[in-house]
Structure formats: structure tokens, C-alpha cells
Length: 275
Ligand SMILES: [Zn+2]
Image (tube, rainbow, N blue to C red; front, side, top):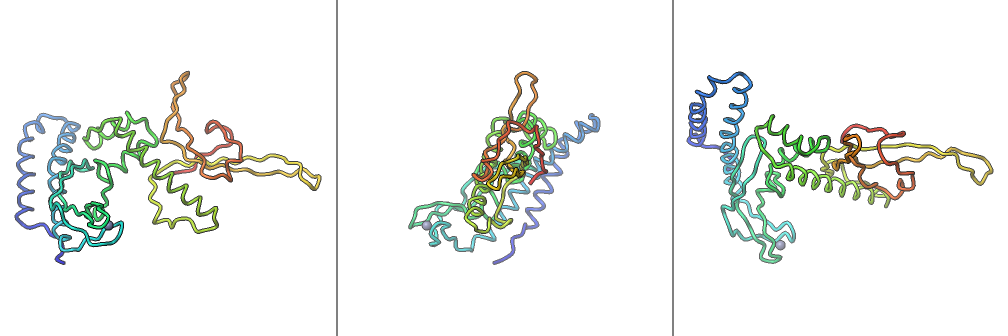
């Protein structure tokens, strides 16, 4: 298979797009202060880089087109039903309208675009990079604040509700993976290898406590208990003070659930970094 490449004519077209787009913005650039110059150039960059991403993906699709696609479900060869299935994505450097081949499996009738997997594109309307950035912000900040930060830093307008939905979806995937690892560990098996765990950034709450227990030897012994749980991305707002804190997620193990559950991050709790 030939290596994917961008032809000289396509690179020339992209360079011309940049020249024309920049040229149209020169009057406003010359009237702006530095803040305005930066903002306008960010917008120029999004308009120019979006088509660059589209062309790069098209070249990758072309290079992959000779490969025989197999069904992810039953591994049978699949039939091409649409060579140019369209998909729109919002990304870190622009908006992309991409086209990629769509196949259907004759045996189990499952359809898929293998190029999505090659590119690391999941479901939804955002690129993996934009999803990661928004979720990382969404874990610590109110979702409206995330929308403001993304608008100011990336010149991208995203609905607060969509940020909330995507962050919660990623959070639930991360929690499912943690639960699976816990089940494996409790069964005495190796938990998932670290490269298989694709959880996004999260804050882990760890609490330790001790209590004196009267044991069968007639003596009092100190027993230690521990608790670990994800914090957020749900946010609790104190109606009285207006102060918002990350809500504690469900506890990952039956073993630790015997430990006293605390209502917040006060007491002996400690926030321990990010994963
Ligand atoms: Zn199949």
C-alpha cells in the first residue's frame, strides 16, 4: 500500500486558501489592538485548518482504501455500501466535513466505518481532542464556565448542555472501566492492563479512618477502614452559600462500602491528584 500523501496541488490550494482568508482580514487586523489581532487570527486559523484536516483525512482514506475490511463483530469480510459517507465534526483546530467508506457485514448486518477506528473517532460530534479538553475542564468547572473558557481559548462556541452531556458520558465510561477492574481484582484476576484503561482525567477521593474494636481476644484493637470514590463530574451547589463542590460518585467496591460513608470532602478526606 502506498503511503498516504497530500499532492502538491492540494497543498497549493490550501496555501491559497490561507492567503485569501488572511487577505480578507487585513483591514480588521490593522484596526485592532493585540487582543483583537489574536482573536481574529484564531478565527482565521480555524477557517484554514479545518480544510487541511479534511484533506489529510481524505489522503489517509485513499491510502486505506485497498484494505479488506472485516466485521468487528464476526470477522467476516464486509461489503462497501457507501464510499463517501459524510460526517461533520467540531475539533480543536476547526470544523471538519469528512467523507469515509461505509461497510456492511452480510452475515450479521452490522455497519461501520473502519476509518473512524483508524482515526480514533468515537460517537458524537466532536473530535477526540476537543472531547478530552471539554471533559477535563468539565470535571473541575461548572459547564457554563467551560463554554466560556473554550470560546475564549479556542474560538469555538459549544452549548453548555452538550458539554454537560459529553462530560457525563465520558465519566460513566470511566466509571464502568473502574468497576470492571474492581470485579477482576475481587475475583483474584489481574485488573485491566493500564493501556486498556482509557478513562479520562478524574479526581479520586480517598478517605481513611480508624476505630477501636473489642475483639475475641478480649483486647481493644484499632481497625483501619478506607474509602475510594470518584469525585464529580456532577456538581452539588449549597443553596445557602452558593458554593459548588464536586459530588461523590458511587463507591467502586463492596469491600470499601462497609466503611462509614461521609457526606462531603471534609473530615479526614483527601483529594489525591488526577488520573
Ligand atoms: Zn459480521
